[in-house]
Every structure is written in C-alpha cells, then in structure tokens.
Image (tube, rainbow, N blue to C red):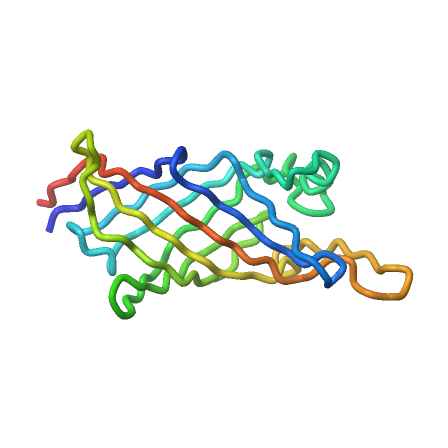
Length: 182
C-alpha cells in the first residue's frame, strides 16, 4: 500500500490548553506556532503515524506577564526546552470517525505516554483541488508528571493552580505526497 504524507495547515489549526486557577475558574491559553505531519497508508488512519512540534515561546494566554512567567523554569523552561513534541505510537479505531491516539508527549525533556480522544474527518477536496483532512483531539495530563511543579497557596490555604491540564486540538492537514512502496 502507498504511504501518503499530510502536512499540518497551521493557518486553519489551533492548539489550546485549559487549567484551573484558584480552583474556581479556568484559564485558557494557546500556542501560536506549531508544525506537524501525518503519514497514512492510503486513507486508512488506523495505522497512521502523527508528529507535532510546538514552539513553547509562542504561548499566549492574553496576559503578557503570565505568558512570560510560563516561559520560565517555573513552567515550560523555554530557554532550555523550546519545543514540546508529540509522536504517535498507536492509533486505535473506535466507532465511526473516532479514534484513540496513543503517543509520547515530550515536555521539559520528560517523555510520557498520553492518549487523545480524536475524531478524523473524511478526506475532502478544497476549492483548489487539494485533499484535506481534519483531526480534532482532546486529552489531559498532570503537569507535575513533566516536572512542572510550581505551586502557590492562597491566603486561606487553597491551591492557586490546578495540576490537570486539558488540551483541545483542532487541526487541518493537506495531502503533500504519495510515497510508493517497493
């Protein structure tokens, strides 16, 4: 079977995260610079391989002071670890267009297995004749598993920042090339 390479269309994609603040509200942020690819056997995504690389310095929470703090050693340590990466190791088909994508997430030099619930669209042709797919995924992780242990207590002894971080990912990929197998 021929392998197809799909390249992430960043202009039509977003990678967001959410974390509890003071355990009463949720702060949403996003990464503005990232790239990725998927390799599939034909249009069969159950055996696909996915890779995404995120520029940590592109973090945005709509608060520059907080964004600068998130780039420090207290959180992402962007100076020493400028990229956050995900590489799939197994994709398990579910019903209809649903999949579970298992892979290695590397952040701050620590790699951990993580799984995302995903929905993969059917392949469509855009108005310019390009083939495209959409992949929407969500997952969560414990930030402390990746060495992000920054913590503060409120005046009343409450937790200022939640440990669980949720990811919401909406991506679009464009078919680039077909690699004929020998």
